[in-house]
Image (cartoon, rainbow, N blue to C red; front, side, top):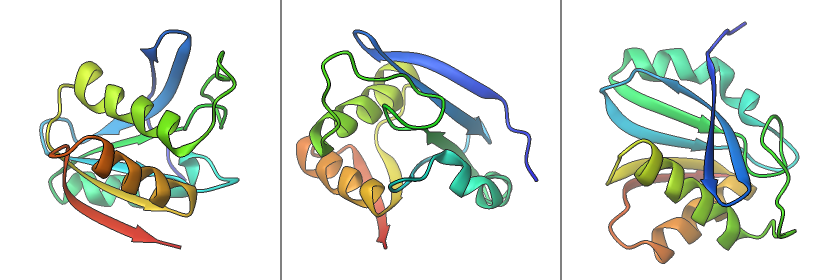
Length: 127
């Protein structure tokens, strides 16, 4: 299977996301899971994408997997988009970046692109 190092970052007050980061220095690519999945759904893709030249960032959205619950109780697209934007920009220093998302993650990627113009330079959405 896979054994990627798990990282954690407080992206907003009281909101801590767990994430994988592989291929550091490559073109930044954010992978977003759907509902009721976790980042593990991307496990078979991470190494190949890192080898292809991407810096692959794969978070568990707030309330999923190893990420913490939201102290404000918000689990909508806007809250998730703000979290992953903070992870990619404030924590990891990436702007712009590519994003791919399925199901809930696709909605988050759409909101992210609309809420933060210029943040996403390429996007793949599927269900």
